[in-house]
Length: 477
Ligand SMILES: Nc1ncnc2c1ncn2[C@@H]1O[C@H](COP(=O)(O)OP(=O)(O)O)[C@@H](O)[C@H]1O
Ligand SMILES: [Mg+2]
Image (tube, rainbow, N blue to C red; front, side, top):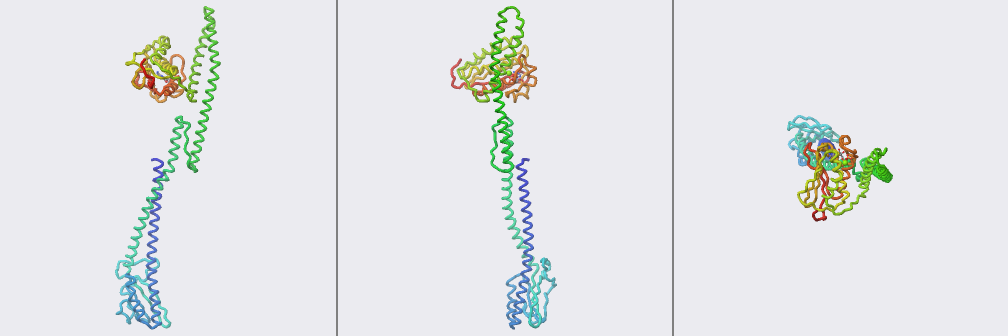
């Protein structure tokens, strides 16, 4: 489960839980308030009745109380009966027939006052919910009684509660939607920088050291991005220093090496001129081979340094590929013969157009591919260089009958310093450095072409293929 999904779910659950809790609390509070309200209403009504009865007795105005009591049920339909007893006789009653008679009671069981919690007796329709209020008289005593129909009061409270519940759930629903939206947004806000970080780390891992994360926040995630960027900057700086160092060192090695090579040539020339077997001739030849190898390595390093500093300018000219192939084959012929390998260059199926390219660089690519092929192909094998012209480009394939490229190497083959697991042991002649294919790739891509492994049947040797676009170099060779 992704971090974003997990965060979003957690926040949504929290919001839903909080809403459910709050709604329940609201509902319970509302129920208590409604009960308290019903009780308060009964009390108020009883007090008012007692007050009116008091005034009526003092003012000797019986009709005032009688009239008042008669009007009460109209005010509250849940009222069952109300009456006033003064000196043991009914002074006023909602049932006017009982006026003047003895205290009639409630006409049913009197469960007494509902009590402060407002526990309502229910079930028996005669159940009354009663409030008794003493009537204060100058001489004598009285009581005002209001009795409610408990079932009706309970029903009214239930109806009010139902309306409240509907209102609460409507509000809760809207808040839930809002909460979910905020939750997902929040999850996104937290997970996006992490996803960005992941992407940037991947980019840096694959060598794009200039990658940076946009820093848009000031919290921990923002600081993490800042530190990440600082780290990437350090890496980039180190990489630049390494490149500058390699370039400088290689450059410094080049001139003394050139001097050594020319002195060696001179000494060998002198040795040959002296005739006979010169005592150091063999050693000098060995030194020359090692120097040549060093020189090649330095040449490769310089090429890489140039590529890295984007100083890799192509000297383009019209290039006839068959001629270049012929040159390369010619220079490798003695080596191939010595190794017992046949170098084949079948005639292309159609005329090969002239391409606009840097002839030295194209030669370098072919040289790398053919030298690799010869290096890894066993005695008795073949190396074949084929040209396949098409309208847009010329493809050149170098195929050998050697061991082929191991599957785990295919991905990384064109990276710098990458060599097969036993490349150095398996190779014939000078050991390579793993730079040849990397340089070839840069050269081909600078020309706008592609280089890669051609389709290869397992165990049938390696086959490298590169293309050069025809561009407007036009014409056939
Ligand atoms: N024709 C081939 N047959 C088998 N393996 C090859 C062939 N060409 C290249 N390779 C593998 O690719 C690696 C890289 O080649 P390259 O970049 O030219 O470096 P180098 O030749 O200096 O080792 C070689 O070390 C070898 O393992
Ligand atoms: Mg090589």
